[in-house]
Amino acid sequence: MNRILKHIPVMKKELIHSLKIKENGIYIDSTFGTGGHSHEILKKLGKDGKLYSIDKDPIAASIGNNIKDSRFHIINENFSRLLDYAKNKKIIGKVNGIIFDLGVSSLQIDDYKRGFSFKQDGPLDMRMNPNHGISASEWLFKSNVNKIAFVLKNFGEERFSKKIAYAIKYASQIKKITSTLELANIIRKAIPIKNKFKHPAKRSFQAIRIYINQELEEIKKALESTLKILRPGGRISILSFHSLEDRIVKKFMIKNSTKATIPYGMAITEKQLNDLKICKLKIINRISPTQSEINDNPRARSSILRVAEIKK
Ligand SMILES: C[S@@+](CC[C@H](N)C(=O)[O-])C[C@H]1O[C@@H](n2cnc3c(N)ncnc32)[C@H](O)[C@@H]1O
Image 1 (cartoon, rainbow, N blue to C red):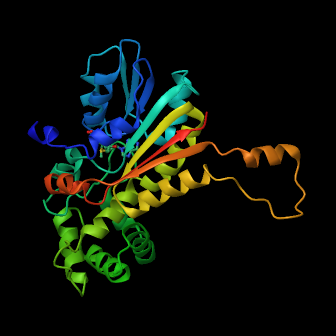
Image 2 (image 1 turned 120 degrees about the horizontal axis):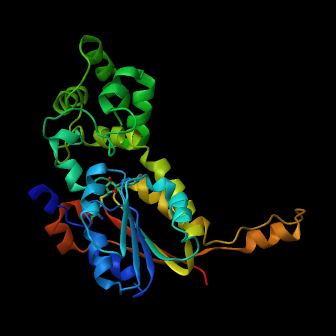
Image 3 (image 1 turned 90 degrees about the vertical axis):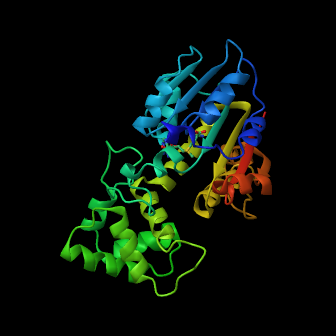
């Protein structure tokens, strides 16, 4: 239970402030985790306010199920299904704010049984929802060198991706890799140049986790759906923890806040012209954590909070 209490939400004050919470507004917390942000939102809501929270992790959802508050609803789902959820709750175009606090929670990473950590030994799983998809162990076993190297390079920006992929496949021929420390040791041995400030398996574990949970695809789908769910003036606040996530968020905000330009002389219908003119978002802010927050919570170091608003 202590582990659950240890998840410290990053930039909590800034994120909640960015929502400009209205007492009777409707809000969505797409990444409930252990509920740090959800509880703050509930504190600011009046009796007619509503908070819909989502988490794909069944353990996180069960924490949410313990909150007895008629203004609060939790669902154990992928946030890529946000639009279906909003349709089901009849809140399309009515929502005042949606937040995303991306990545894994301490509840997941600190629990060796979940298989996310390269520092503690546990079963090599890495699924946020262990009831869906395949474990990291199964995936490594059935994938070829090229596929593994692709994932390590593209989702972990690992420059020794090929060397590591070969080492993983070589080890798998002798015995299927089933534990986190087994994998961490294979990676450590395969890397020719070590960075003394970073664990050699950090990038590869991040890459495999992102792939296994389809994290980048999930974000892209969910962000697009927010445009339909939010009301004019509604806010979207997204906290990301690495450049792959932040790049998607930034691109989404720029794309939807910039007018497209039409090449001179290009034939275009009036409807197409009007569609092009619509830019749905106004970018509000980009916030980094303070040095004092980074000192207190090293997880904050790489975080970026981006905030945008649906145009009125
Ligand atoms: C950083 S934690 C959120 C922590 C939370 N804000 C708090 O204060 O406790 C991210 C959470 O999002 C969940 N999550 C990540 N990707 C998801 C997805 N695609 N769909 C639903 N939940 C997801 C994870 O299971 C995890 O519990």
